[in-house]
Each structure stands twice: as C-alpha cells, then as structure tokens.
Length: 561
Image (cartoon, rainbow, N blue to C red; front, side, top):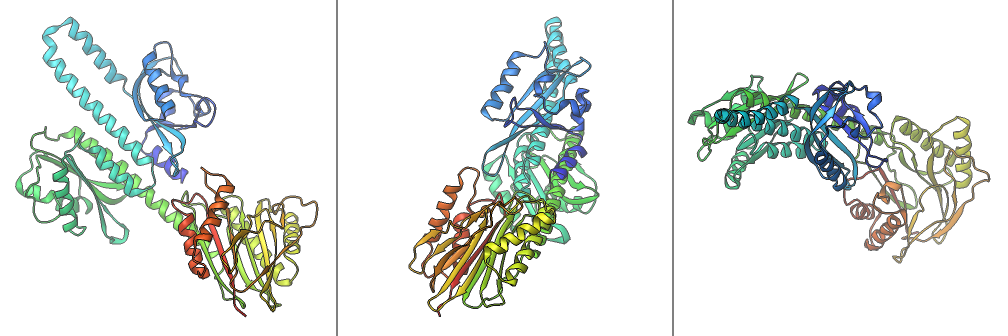
C-alpha cells in the first residue's frame, strides 16, 4: 500500500516529507521528488536529516520555536519559514506539519507538506513598504491584501485537504473530512457524490455552514434514495465542470438531490467531476449563498484541483480494498475446511489483520489420523508477505503428512524442523502439534510446542487454565536436544483452545496481560457453550478494535462416550 500512496503523492506533484519521531532528532525518512526539486537537494542527501538543514541565518527564531513546540506537543501546525536551497538561495516555505497516528492513537510519524510561497511573501513585504512610502495607495493595497489572504486561505485549504486525504485509507472518513474542511472556507455547503463500481449504489457526503440547513440537506439526500442531483449526474456522465455565477431557481433545483429546492440558499455554484486514471467516480458540488462573492475562475481551478485529489484518494482506496480482498482470499484458500472428527466437536476461526494488504502466515489444521486419534496443529510464520504465505503452506502440509504417519507430537515437530533446515526454508515459525487419543474415560492429550503460545483448557466444570509444558525453540532454529511431549487427561465436556498471537498481543499491553484477558474471556463464557459459541464469545471479547495481526483460533470439545 505504501507504493500506492507514494505513486499518488508523486502524481499530484506535491512537495511532501515524512519524518520518524521514534528515531533520534526526528529525521526525514521519505521525501517526494517535488521536495527535492524545490530545495535543490538530491533525495539521497535528504534522508536521515532533520528538516532544520533548510534553515539558515535569516530563519525567524519565533518560527523555529513554533515548529519545535508543535512537534513536542504532537500537534498539527502551519508556518511560513525562510529556508535555503542547496545553492544557498533563500525562499519562503509554507510548511504544514501533521502527526500521523496508528489505529491505537500512537504517534508513528510526522507528515509535512511544503509550498514555495516566495512570490506571495515578497509581495506582502513590498506592500508593507509601500504603505509607509505612499499613503495614497492604501485603498489598492487593502484590496491586494484581501486577494493575498484569499489566496493564502485557498492554499491552506489545499494543504489541509491533501493532508486529510492521504492520512487515512478509510474512504468514508476521508471524504467526510473533505466536505467539512471545504465549508466554510470555500463554500457554504458542499456535496460529494460517489458512484460505486459496476453501477452500484451512490454514497453522498455533505456539510453545511448552518446546522438547521444541514439537517434539511441530509433529509433531502436521504429522500432522494441515493440518486444524484441533475448537475451531479451530468458531471458523472462525463461532462465538463460547470461554473454558475448567478444561480436561478431552475438551476438551484439541479444542485440538490430530489425534485425541490425550496429553502436552499444558492447564489453561485461549481460542479466538477471526480476523475482519476481516465475514470469518473463521482462529482463535487460547491455552493455559496447569495450574500457571498460569486465564484470565479480561481475558485473553479481550486475546485478542480480538490476534485482531482479526492478522485485519486477514491481510486487508491478501491485499489487497496481490491488488493486486500485478494490477499484475504489467498490466505483463506491455504487453510483447510473444518471437517468432522470422531470423538470431538470442532470449530475454527480465521480473522485477517486490518493494517495492510499483505498475506499473513497464520494457519491451523485438524485431521482424523489413520489410527483413529485426532491431530491438531496451529502455527504462525514470521512475516506478512508472499514468502510467509508460501512457507505457511509448506509447513502446514509437512505437519499434516508427518502427523498422519504417526509418532508423538514432539517427534513430528523434530522431523518438520529437520526438513525445514534441510530445505533451507529461512522463515522462522512457531507451531504447536497435538494428538488426542480416546480412552474409556475420556481422552489423553499429547502436545509439543515450538515457541507457540500455550493452549487453554476449559474443563467441563468450568475451570480454565493454560497448558504451559512441552515448550521448545521455534521451527527453523538450531535445536540442541530433541523436543519432548507434555500430556494431559481430558474428560467429556472439556474444551481445548489453540490460537495465534494476534488474538492476545496488543501494542499497549504485554503478553501476560493478553493471556490473562483470554483466560478471563473463556471463563466468562457459559459453561454450556459449544465450540462455535465459544469461538464467537472469545472473538467478541478479544477483538474490540481493528486487528493489527491475523488471528487463528481452534476450539475442540471432547464428546460424551
């Protein structure tokens, strides 16, 4: 996904940098080609340096302090600072910095958007000197200042909109933020209509400067049943942008979804299509009330720029969703169907992580062995790429084959480990292999773990505990001694739970805390819960937000004799 975002930024020719506050002195770890062109530095000279390398003798101390304070407070800020290019020439740089947080609201990076505003700053400085020298030009200067402020507001709007659009892969969130940042700087009310691929339903995002009018606008959108306004439909059909300097009653009706425009204050309007990579994906409507200055060509150009950036965001988000679907489909294709086994009731879950489109390395397997015993394996290959997925498929089939041939779980893991090292499979993996043999009174569980998390045993009486014996090194490491089995007596109604680390690990808590949460979640489930019900209860209790890693979960309950 990083490649997609990088291509999108490069396509918009935005000067953008990313720094890493987790490293000493918050160095730049990425810069767009536009930043290199603006500063004269090569990309190789930029990486690893704090952005202070652009400062010099003339850089304002108060501006430096504002930027340091914003970084220290982890807050967004926009400043205009005097910087110096590689050849020593000075330029005025409008810098907008914003913190980037992960799904746990932890700071990971700062993103900076730079705009060369030298011409504007020099114009303002020259104007101030002109005020002192020539009082008679005050009226003209005031008008020029208003124009400069409008230009600055529009530049700030572009910076804010770009920052919001690239800061998230959640399309709904990005487009709702866009309409809210446009109002009231550029419009009194704003609509974005988004057509789904294959002529699916439309989605509408709206914002209005007045709360009462906003409620009316949303009601009309809902009453229209997802249909676009006539002006929107025209733009989405491939027609060019539309600028209406003075909106008539007939034209007002074309701007609002539905058949009526009563109560809509529309003095001037702009409607532009959302187009990216030769596709029209929706339309943007901007409307000013009759009390504001009508739109002109500068606002139309700005609206087209906003629409182009929004369209790229839509296209990139759809590409991300498509790639993620492919990755998840591939992952699930590598996992087995949960077949019935004699002597036990089984359920399993696989939940993909939500942080990217990469394929994970989690797996599980349940099979009836040739001698009537039940074999269960679960594991996790380190990494989230195609190599990890390929290694996962190899390991699952190795374990299945050796388990089918017979032997204790420790022996099965040792044989797999020797084959892994013999075939030079470089990916490390955790794995747990278990064998359940029925007895007259219930069953015997034999298991061995190669660095995997301990199983959870829920007894028929409701007691819950971790099975922490039988531990050894991960698969792929040099094992000095043969692995050993652990064993446990099972009784009818006992349930064994196997899982991968994505279920219990969180960035803001240690592993012990995660295991304690899991034990508590199992303990809180009804004693009568069958494996399917127990899996649902555990997933609901343990996944209270976006998953940062894949999760595999297996529940096996010993049947009554």
